[in-house]
Length: 305
Image (tube, rainbow, N blue to C red):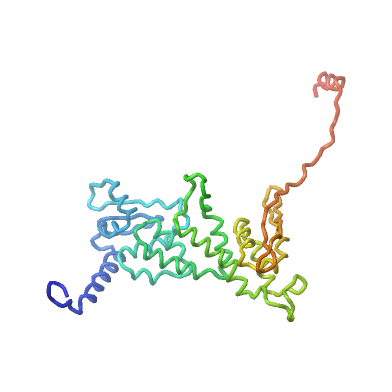
């Protein structure tokens, strides 16, 4: 009841019609726009009252003086490669209507999440895009997610400097990193059946399954910090994957990485493991020492050589 009257049943549909009109006539068509937004070289004819839902855009509008009937604002996204044109368009559309959620898919979800975090004030879109991201981590996409983990700044160390670079993803960066780690430790070995017994015997290096080989192949590409976390995790049956100690990576500049596993202590799988990294440079080339006497130097000087 409202003011003593029952709420008419058509109120919900009326509100939906308004939102649909705003999205189509306002966002898609740009009718009666009072603000031009330039992002990734693309121009959007939009409306300040709806753009102000984003604290970031509200700040840009309030700090961009304009005497023209239509204000023009350029959104700088050059330093945020995760904020793509497609992802930003979806986030802008969400300022007008939740119909933009229909455009989020596993291929653009990370860009949508980055754009929504960049704009701010869109927690529901962030949560939705994050869920799509988390569910998209698979054997087929793990390489892309590993590259993503390498790009984002690592979480700040406890007691360390507070002025470390931060990710546009905010708290979702840590959550996505944790999701990729969980996938490597739990989901991936299970999906690949990496630790299934071979002919009724425990899994060994001499009788390993194809799933085990596939797991090693993927683990060889994991960034060291995450590799260390995965192998040291109590959820990973490290007693069955001793072959990972053979992991090596070429770091460039004639530097080779060797992973050393130290076993000790007891756990449900018989031992615990700690991973350290030893960087070995190639030995310097020794050249023969040539001894030149003072007489030889004098002769060279007079000969003009």
